[in-house]
Image (tube, rainbow, N blue to C red; front, side, top):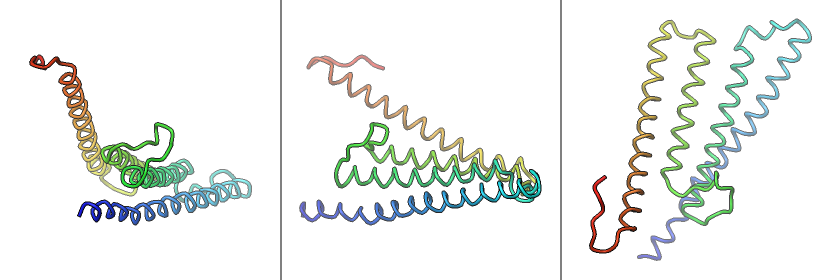
Length: 180
């Protein structure tokens, strides 16, 4: 039974490949889209002046949306690499790319979720796509605040557990650790 369960860890290769392909999609098509958008802005500004592209989104918003796509691709890539490191085999990467727990993967996902919501809000602000901007902003701000609180409390709890475990290890046998 142990051998069977050990072998099932390779099922994680399915989402790893899917995440890697999705990351590649965001990188390739996001990069191509960015190049096309920059080309269109350049051609429009050379042929009919600087305001020619103003009919759609402002250039800054378009570029930020492409950066947003690259961030999503990066998180998908980091998640794929992290799952591989956790379940299959460690990979020698720089320390910032080493994933030691699913908690780190969750934090990456929450981070990109916050960025996605913020970019979405910025797009709505620039395009004036809603009549009730305050309600829309609050609807985005509340989940961001909840996710921030969740990450903060989880980090605090994890650090407290590590500190308590470290203090317990340092105590000589027979003595109790002082209350925190």
